[in-house]
Length: 123
Image (cartoon, rainbow, N blue to C red):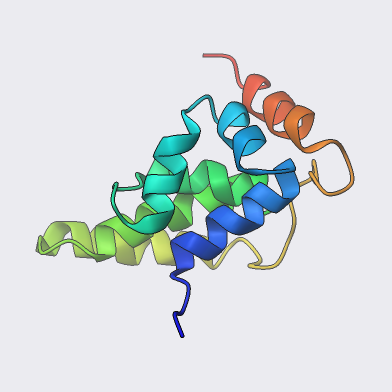
């Protein structure tokens, strides 16, 4: 019996909301084979990609990206990065863990919810 890793679970949840792995990859503007490789552990998954996956799965985008950055920094050997991870964890305490995104992709169409949220922040 195999157990799923947190990344596999996250990709599966986001794919379910998006309506399949191909649609999820299209929403994230990436090749489906890259998502499959990430799910298998054959390709690294950046904090940005994990943040997008969390947001698509329905987590508040702010919390999603901060949590993904904290995960990366906490895994580091560098003391300064571990200290930064502690700071991110403190910030996460300000965002309720189970609060959903104001634009909930399960209520609205998933592709438009993520696109509207992402495009609403002009640079």
